[in-house]
Length: 272
Ligand SMILES: Nc1ncnc2c1ncn2[C@@H]1O[C@H](COP(=O)(O)OP(=O)(O)OP(=O)(O)O)[C@@H](O)[C@H]1O
Ligand SMILES: [Mg+2]
Image 1 (cartoon, rainbow, N blue to C red):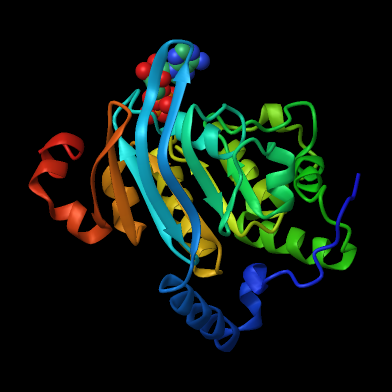
Image 2 (cartoon, rainbow, N blue to C red):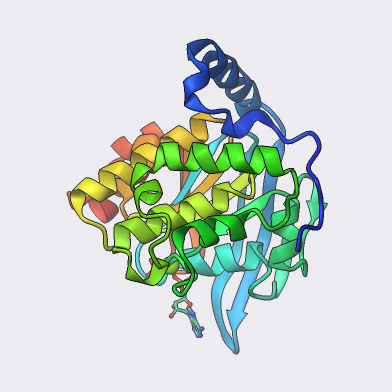
């Protein structure tokens, strides 16, 4: 089951308990990365379901260390893009580069090994497995047992509720708890780029707060994030940059803080 050791895993999951100095170091690394290289570059991407084109030529990029959000209404093509990136749907045209190499045609498992993990829409936890087993599945590509144990404690630190219930079957968890588990499982692969598809969907306001807090925390730990959300104001509130999608195309892009105050975005997505 364990196929590869990541000998020089980045310090993304350093436990928060290591103190302010370590955190400051990590933050400094992150800031440097934000001006750094392109981790993901999508060019002219087209994806179709049979004869119906759902994504019609989309360009966007995510730089190392950034938190980038893709917002847009129902059916805009956000999930389709996430699935194309992770090899779950074929690319009809265009290219997807990850760390400067095309990943077109690569399968999800190979991509996880390269540090690209996704928490899918609907979470996708293994219902008949316990919380602990789900989290262990997330580390299937690793065999650095000591560090896996550390990361498990780190995930339990972020989500104490998962620790309390570690032997409970995932299928019996609430929606919010399943979202925590899905995120925890993805973190167990030590992702370099984490794709999150609608993590706040269907959650109570308190749980939505918690999930956005965690996304920010994970970003501050050095994980580059592409966040798909319908909750545009919350997503733009934590992101560095954003892309707005409509009917399979990117219609606006910019700094998240600028999009948040843009009258067109406010009218279309923030109910103003
Ligand atoms: N399996 C499928 N077969 C045919 N059409 C599909 C399929 N999945 C999605 N589509 C269509 O592709 C378009 C884009 O869908 P997609 O799920 O990517 O939207 P989305 O932006 O993620 O929407 P939402 O915010 O509701 O999740 C929609 O018009 C949708 O009906
Ligand atoms: Mg979707």
